[in-house]
Image (cartoon, rainbow, N blue to C red; front, side, top):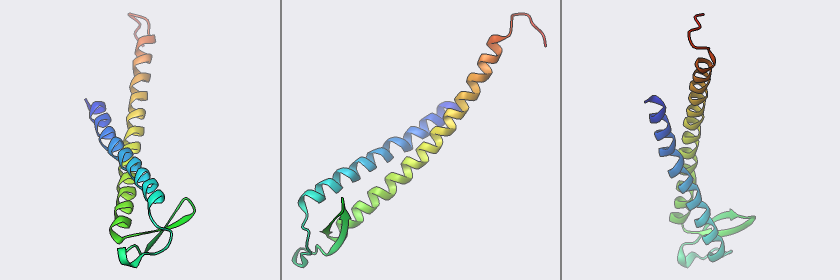
Length: 110
């Protein structure tokens, strides 16, 4: 039961975290392709951001959106990875116990 709960929570963090990172990469690529390389004060595009070695200019809201996606995506993915490693450790322990009891001959008392 404990292993199933740990696996569930690992996936609950891993999958949305990965989705956030993919969304951040997709949005960054879209911004890189479409946004200006010089400031445009009339459109409030005055916040510089370096993507792929080039500076593009975003609005404050667009910059905040990219930061949030990256921040929460990385944190959720990291928590999911840690829980996943604990899950793998517990699975390895259970498999070792199972193999050690399986290898003993029937009726052998130690």
